[in-house]
Image (cartoon, rainbow, N blue to C red; front, side, top):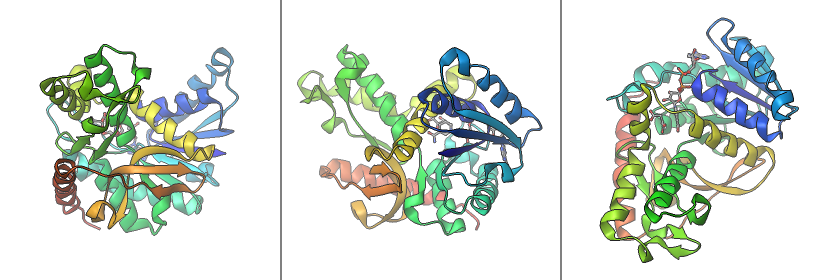
Amino acid sequence: MKITVVGAGAVGASCAEYIAMKNFASEVVLLDIKEGYAEGKAMDLMQTASLNGFDTKITGSTSDYSKTAGSDIAVITSGIPRKPGMTREELIGINAGIVKTVSSSLIEHSPNVILIVVSNPMDTMTYLVHKTTGLPKHKIIGMGGALDSARFKYRLAEALEAPISDVDGMVIGGHSDKGMVPLIGHATRNSVKVSEFLAENRMQQVVEDTKVGGATLTKLLGTSAWYAPGAAVSGLVQAIACDQKKMFPCSTLLEGEYGLEDLCIGVPVLLGRNGIEKVVEIELSDAEKAKMQESAEGVKKTNGLLQF
Ligand SMILES: NC(=O)C1=CN([C@@H]2O[C@H](COP(=O)(O)OP(=O)(O)OC[C@H]3O[C@@H](n4cnc5c(N)ncnc54)[C@H](O)[C@@H]3O)[C@@H](O)[C@H]2O)C=CC1
Ligand SMILES: O=C([O-])CC(=O)C(=O)O
């Protein structure tokens, strides 16, 4: 299994590290536009192999896509991150051009590749890849919901004063400060609804803290986060590489599911060897449906800024 990660920055390197640590891939190629940067990160990571006990071979490349040839899965993290006070949507001007060029170069050298889009604004970048590459929709996956759900579980565990392994929950909708839809009504502690333990205002606090999870970290770090994003991507890559049929919320092209069409937005999907193997339609309450509709309108507004 050959995996390429484009962008050897904070998220790309973290993602490559987690993939290698899980030891399921034979090869990870890191590619970056900055001269020598991906090669340096690859060498540094390889020097952790004997310490951390993995056999995955990590190599680096400066803009040479021939080194990525025959990749089964490629992750796109190239582009600029936001700074404190910015929204993800403000990154569209620079990142759209980068994502368009990178996705076409990847497909040229790996026509059968499955693409995982990370660069922000992620739902719109995923839609751009659909509009410009001609790859089938099950091979284009946007990563956002897996990360947002991990942050939701972190906030739920905090509120419940419970171990994170005790809680379960999912975030659907757009990967944006306003558009995320944390499904608090479905969240559980050991299969018991969290509403059994938490007051309404505490649950609302969990929802609000989850939605601004990325912005909170950006304010603290001066740039956006990378450990949880890298771990979330590695989970998606592993589900595909190991044909796990695992369920994650991912951004995918909707064609009527959830009453939505002609956009990419986060909904639960099953991930396996073929990429997105099924969009899972769960029953939403009227309030959740309305939030999903509002989120979709936000994503479509950002999509409207794209120039193909
Ligand atoms: N979808 C999600 O859940 C998340 C998305 N992100 C997004 O991921 C992106 C990357 O974030 P970081 O890694 O923190 O940024 P970073 O600045 O640390 O790394 C980005 C890398 O992309 C490289 N790059 C730029 N143009 C390129 C090109 N044309 N070809 C190859 N490489 C190129 C840069 O040289 C840099 O090394 C940002 O857009 C950020 O907003 C970050 C976290 C979570
Ligand atoms: O917040 C950001 O800009 C990066 C990101 O998407 C996240 O960490 O959720």
